[in-house]
Amino acid sequence: MKWQKETSIGNSDGILLTHYFKSNPSMVGSPELHGTPEVYHGAKHRRRFYWIKNTLNKISWSCVEYKDGSFLLSEGQGSPFHNPPQ
Image 1 (cartoon, one colour):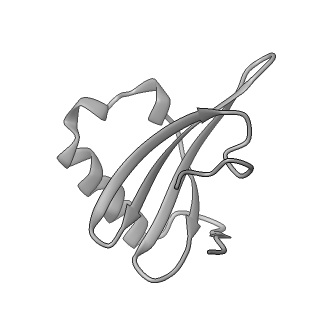
Image 2 (cartoon, one colour):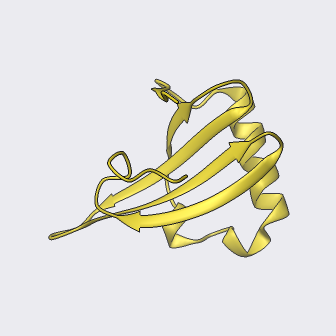
């Protein structure tokens, strides 16, 4: 599957993230999901929201993926685009 980067967060993206945080209140205020994510879309009903943090010697990332009505949180180090969530 090929993912396309969005230029900005759309209204439907904001609705999805609001739903995610309401369903996962422990993630509200999480430093891993702080700031504005990069948004990617795949096939219909699929979105990925990436929070990418660059520190001195490493890149770490968190991804909330929306797929067919469900959310999945994944995290990793290095580029999320070389080893994306499955």
